[in-house]
Image (cartoon, rainbow, N blue to C red):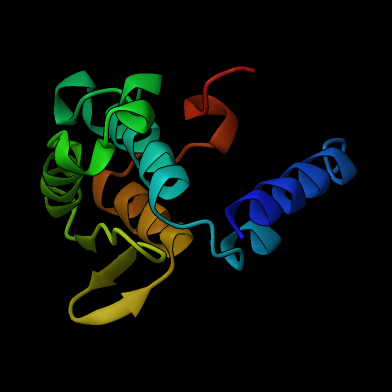
Length: 128
C-alpha cells in the first residue's frame, strides 16, 4: 500500500506542479504536521526574531523531526503571541485563541495584530 501511496503522491505532484492556490484555498487544505510546522517556523522567526525557534531544515524531516524538540519551540513561540498550538504527529496541527479553535491563517493574522506587524507571505516565506 505504501508504494501505491507514493505513486499517487508523485502523480499528484506532477499533475499540479504548475498550479497555485490562493490564501483561502490554502487554509482549507489539510497539509498537516511537517508542512504546517515548517511554515510556522518561517513565520514565527520572521515575526519574533531568529531566537523564537530553530529554522526548519531538511534534517528535521529526515531525522524524526517530532523528537527533535522543534515542536516545543514552535508551541512556545506561538504562546508569545497568545496562540495555543498543538503540533499533531498524525493529523493537522491545531491552533486556538482564548479557547476557540482557529485555522493556521487565523493564527497568523492574530500574531500580526498582537505584534502590530502586518506582513505578506512573500515577506517571510523562503524564496524557491
